[in-house]
Length: 390
Image 1 (cartoon, rainbow, N blue to C red):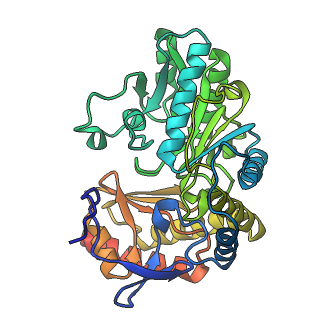
Image 2: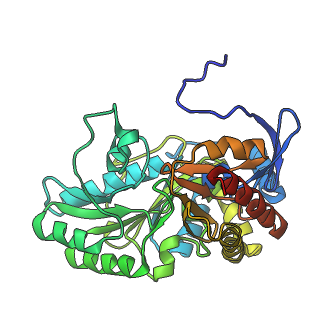
Image 3: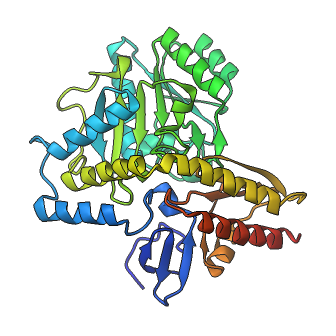
């Protein structure tokens, strides 16, 4: 047995190589990847432009310390700032690190505003990571259990419920920020209404709170805009990114704007590997390909086709509660726990995921073809109908 710590319920398959939206296992069996490494493989597998860029960078420079200037990090920060209309970028290695940076930034901001015990509003069913602080901000008791005492300073409210936030604002003078996902991925593909985002942006301005969006899963073109909150025409004070930013190369980012700009000073925060040349070239190449190949528009068209196809295939089935999503972030909610569908799909050559016990989650690469989208609909539609006994 391998000496890996037993922290994952691994499926009995190992992949040797991939191409586009296809992966091949050790026995030579091919799979359609509708999960994309959980929203990580934006450009699919073995994308020629990404492979070429990474190979060239490996031949030049992989890592230098952040005590020196890193030209690739400067270029990546400039690109992200231009796309987001934000001002500062801190690079790290993952989503939980980006959210950890956001939480620390909010606390420091609160202290700078004279708040002795700064608190952050977070959402039910949220997922922000597995460090102690991000775990405490997460709204899932299953992942928190056994790690108590949790970090204090978080006030939890229902997702997409502006009245609940207004109530907290009226009674808690320690609030300094709101942290939430515009689309909850782990929570079951729950989508915040645009009016809610705009109202919350306005309230944060009135209260001088930080408006902090976790775009780790829903960002990087997946919903048809660079970042999901942009559908509402707003700019956050803090935004966190990771997953699809490097198309498989680990990179995270915490961006700041407005009143969050300038909060961190040298020595306040850091990351040994954050913003190294290789990861930043991966990010720059990913952003370049998304733009040059029109992949955001593709995400919208493919998402519409997949959701529409599934609605047609599963029409009239009482076991299907909802089919929802935005772009290539799709959830099929059933009326019962359906975790066993993951293994059934694997046997059928399809890679999917189930989250929130009852939601089949699809996060395919943005390079999926029309034929592959149709294959996904046909395969998943049959699997769900068979599972529900319809």
